[in-house]
Length: 101
Image (cartoon, rainbow, N blue to C red; front, side, top):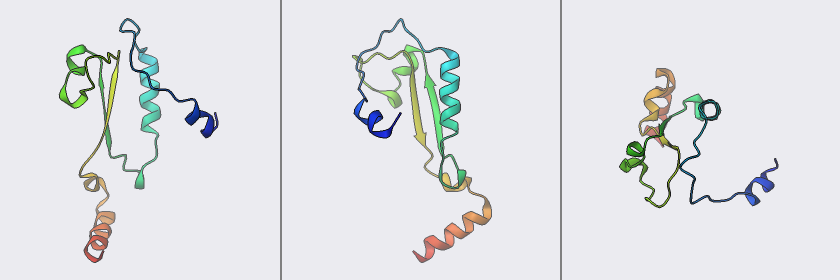
């Protein structure tokens, strides 16, 4: 699929069939693909949370409005202190850069 085709063909889904779920193998494949996404110096400073139950989806971190009922909710968050994951040598170089920037 070409980029223009993907952008022009995109759509926003607002209502979902609660009886139709997401297959475990589809979810696993999606998470594996997300894990392969590139990041700066391969830090991968994100965490993924999968919420399937109604109770979990009502969590404030996922608040999306009651009218939009989704069978599965995936939240992706960015680690605030991602630089702590850097190897020590690279972290020192980054600290030096920040001091002089």
